[in-house]
Image (cartoon, rainbow, N blue to C red; front, top):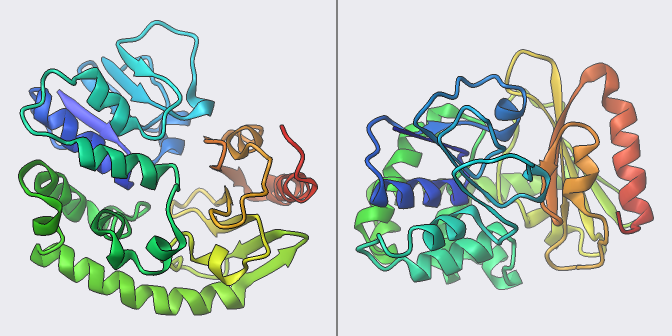
Length: 296
């Protein structure tokens, strides 16, 4: 039995919860949603998909993304919710020996971006937020760290987790990264009528940092588009769209918008990947839709 999930904070918590209640016999397989959509991952009998699109080959599926809804019979649970971890916690509520209530409350807030400006700019004020900022997908060199955080969540309280040597090092790195990331954002972001557009295609190694920082730097914007090249050698361009958590004027359902181009997500955030040849047209439609800011 194997857990297949994505390497974000919600996915980390999903993996920890499933390991608490199921007989997991194989290491976690960490994958991005686009890999499931494109059937680039071998899903097999016994696999548990969490926080990812549905694949009929799995044995259990748990998800909460609007665009991943399916009309199929499956074991597990799908519903719109702040986090996939919260769905798993409810599904197995009578099987947990440890109380994860606080963890789930914070995971719900983090994954649905219901955070305060203080928590974004000074994450030390909330240790769960601080921990979540150290979980960055898109690079499997971090796999050992993700697995370590899963183990820590199962065995330690949050104060002990952020005092772990490996976690403390990641926190220090993230704080340093954010100083550089701020400079990258300022240099590579333009604004078009309430929408900030961050283009990181010039970079071979994409800068990483606090994903909400762009909204504090451009407070008059209500949405951001981030563009980067795929880490794979398939010449894809990845485009992410998200609502500002400070200026909540965006009415566009980002998940529905990017689903037109094979992507998916929530009301407040979504992403898709495009071939280079189709990218400019896709980008133009996404930008114009967000600028118009009409409900879809």
